[in-house]
Length: 222
Image (cartoon, rainbow, N blue to C red):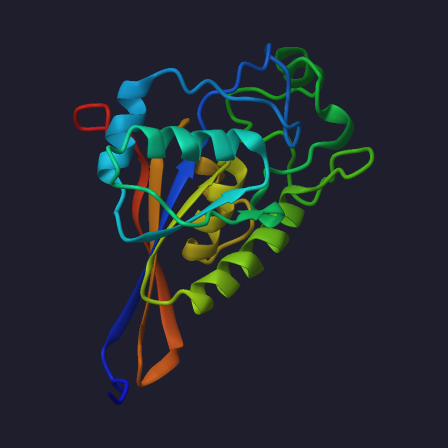
């Protein structure tokens, strides 16, 4: 059968932030810590809200993998992906020497208050081996999204990852400066959804749109 030459192709990305991390009040960034997946009610609700016919991917950090596994376990067989690639490019921002520091003390020393939406600003790079700026995070996340988006056009893609990574995806969809999406709250295990659409007659004119941010299906009206 000949492939259609016109019609809308829509790719829908379902972004899920990992479950809460018992971090002792310390900055963790890319530290590979476990997360708390004990609240089965939350994972049942998230499993019910996510589409069954989807490609699943995670970051390469175990808290993302553990969260995905907890969603699968509470899905009553709805979600059972054959393979679930883990992408280093979807890891959280590497915060270098700041990782492991007391978060409250760090914010006080740096003069960060309620108006400070992130630990770094502008092009500031976290000090130490591996440290990244927030734009560094965006520069590695966006090409990975674009590549997977082209490879799996027209599908649902469920990505279990991190707050910074999800904000990078939202910022890409908004088309503004790298930190434009810092205004969004991304709670643990919440769902954010962005879509890419193009007409087969002119794939170069694809557009991104945001359809949900920080959706918590276990909360009535959440």
